[in-house]
Image (cartoon, rainbow, N blue to C red):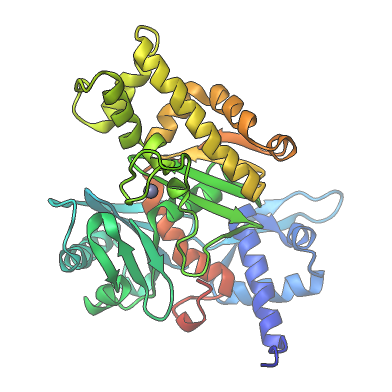
Length: 409
Ligand SMILES: [Zn+2]
């Protein structure tokens, strides 16, 4: 097949996308600054910005003094151009949030799920009902919605039909976007793995900002990761890339909940850490009831308990070995450690985790990498999901509702 030649229309779209993205992430900016940051000519910046102002996508945002000349007009993305919804479908509930285009949260709706294995039809109904409540709370008309993003557990296979494969909640090839459309929601619907949406939130608004090559490593009860190479999320052939938790740390080692032996998750996921702690205590139950408090108990027992100290030391070693694998495979400039358990470990033990990583990584690659804590925390799945329609807007340079078939996802 002959590669399609770039047309004038493609070029125009690319310029719009470049300028709109720059204004979204760096704005407000003057036309002069936009030219400097994008490398586009003054005439192109002026034409394309003029079009986007006519479309209502870009607005003026005050003046800035310039050296000796006339004050320059500052430009920004119009927060009121449209709204986006981000939805976090978790194991314990559904959180729905509505944002304007400055990503200011205007409304939140939380709905608990009684079963950790929720019926798909029930989740569809919750989303449909929550959708109306969300619009009413924010006082926003449905016609102003640019799109909906949904973060879910498990693997999301992108394509004409988006399919969710989530073993842990019992979903096998669920066509979630179709289901949501079936409930009368007509705007474009984007679906992505929750760890990846949280990773994208961290890249856009948190500790990943400005990095082109990064890994967002999320440790909760289980483990996930988002790998960003050259500014883009690495997805693999069917979007399941980034399953760092199921890379083998110890051949023939502990049984993982995926069914394999020796996965990183079986050692460093909160469930794995607590199970090792329980075994080290001779099977004696750990005080407190939920995983989060039990992990806190373990970490705060280090000074008075040799058993706790040994389990934590071992955990740091396993985690360092796991992070070193990321360093050696991807050569990231930054590794962002997040997830509730990752934050609990990192808050107390980041220097030790860095030392353990250095002991297992190639020296040159390790020296190029900084290991930092995430800034947004586990609540960022919904905001990350809301970035999916915004990402479509930025990459198209125009309203994603007009050309949903040209989605960049
Ligand atoms: Zn596994």
